[in-house]
Structures are given as structure tokens and as C-alpha cells.
Length: 259
Ligand SMILES: Nc1ncnc2c1ncn2[C@@H]1O[C@H](COP(=O)(O)OP(=O)(O)OP(=O)(O)O)[C@@H](O)[C@H]1O
Image (tube, rainbow, N blue to C red; front, side, top):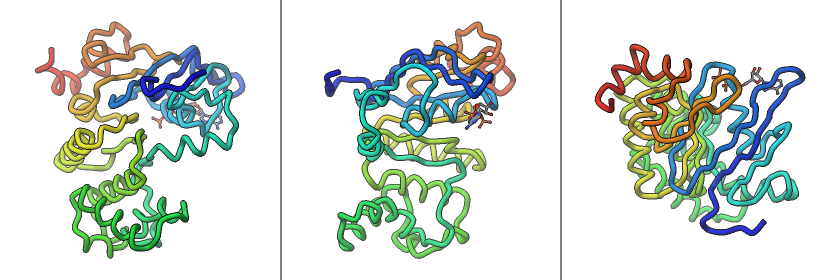
């Protein structure tokens, strides 16, 4: 297949995922264009994390095709997978900083892995990313144990962005943050997205994040993607999980102004 600038950033076609008799995904297809912010929601165990891992080639679906930046992961050599992954940033659940490394070294980690950047450039890039996520250069000297929850998320985001990814994966980016910090983090992501225009795939349970950030929502239920579209599609869905999720007490509060 020919790669083209206008290819979707991610395309999944007819994805089935089975672990023995446990069918997690049944015929899932989706397509994400450049610059979209895709929010994946679904109950616990519905297969959100597995789907994310399949998008980035860390897990092989049982059936179906995954296209990352227009290249079919099932048809290219595994060595090429790593090259495509280098164009992606990942923010793992809980931040997952290396506890023995300072903030500076945590952010520098992906750069050092590449072994092509000299110290001066690493210093420059790390300072730039610290500023970008709203932290002072001095924060670079701190150890993860000295950080608040909100700061941990910012450092993890700086690390995910340090290689200037085209595609950013966020697993529960606001989990563990109180509503104020959560809102600040969403505002930060939104500002960075406006500036850098990366594409985002995120798993989240936070309806405020979905409402404020996502341009497209995917709802995983009954092994299928029962919604894949703008928030209006999710709100209009008759699927019982979607109805419960978006029109329950919390959903009602968050979305009442959208209708
Ligand atoms: N390597 C594996 N081997 C066997 N089963 C697995 C494996 N990885 C995931 N599963 C199963 O796949 C299903 C989906 O798991 P997944 O972690 O993707 O769910 P999730 O939607 O991310 O859940 P949560 O919101 O609780 O994190 C679960 O039933 C899980 O037990």
C-alpha cells in the first residue's frame, strides 16, 4: 500500500482479539485523522488497553489489520514497527516515572536511549519541555518522590513529548488528580495540542476530560465499538452502556449544557 500524507494516522480494520475462549474485540474498525483527539471509554475489562497496545504494535490482534501512519503493521517487518513507534509518545497510567532518576533525567530518558543527542542539546530540549508543561527549570533537580500528583503528570507529559511525537497515547491522564488539578491538566493538554497539532488517543473514565478535549469518542461495549464519532453520536446512542455512561447522574451534570 502506498503511504500518503493524507492517510489516517491510525486505521483498524476488522479487528478481533481472542485470549483462548475470551473474545475481547469482535470486528472493530476505526479511523483517526491527523490532529484528532480520540477518547476511548468502556467498562473495566472491555479491552481499551489491549486495543491501544494493538494500535502501536505492542500486541498482535487475532484477526484484522492495523495501519499506523499508513503502514500495515501486519505486512511490514517488526524492525519497522520500532521506527513507527519512535513517532509516538506514551503517557502511562499513573505517570510511571523512574523513581531513582531526577525529573531532568526522567525527561531526558527517551533522548538518551537514542544515543544521537549531545549533552548540550539534551539540556536544551529538557528545559524547553519543562517550560512547555508549566514547570520551572529548578523542578528538573527534584526527585519523583518530592513531586505532587499534578507535577508527576506534567513531568510524565514532558517525557512523552520530548521526542516531539506526531501521535500521543494517554492512558487515564487525569486519574488520581482532584477536579482542579484535572482541569488544569486538561487545559495544558488542550493548549499544547493547539500549538503542536499532534494526534491523541486516550483512555479515560473522566467525563469532563471527554467533554473538554475529545473530538471523537469511541465506546467499547459488548466486544464492539458501539460508538465511534463526535460527542453528539455518543450522546445520541441507544446502547445501554452508552446511555448509562453519558446520561447517568454524572453524565447528566457534565453534558446537560450540550443537550
Ligand atoms: N495477555 C493477556 N492474556 C490473557 N488475557 C488478557 C491479556 N491481556 C488482556 N487480557 C484480557 O482482555 C480483557 C481486556 O483487558 P484490558 O486490560 O484491555 O481492559 P480495559 O478495558 O483496559 O480495563 P480497565 O479499564 O480495567 O483497565 C480482560 O478480560 C483481560 O483479562
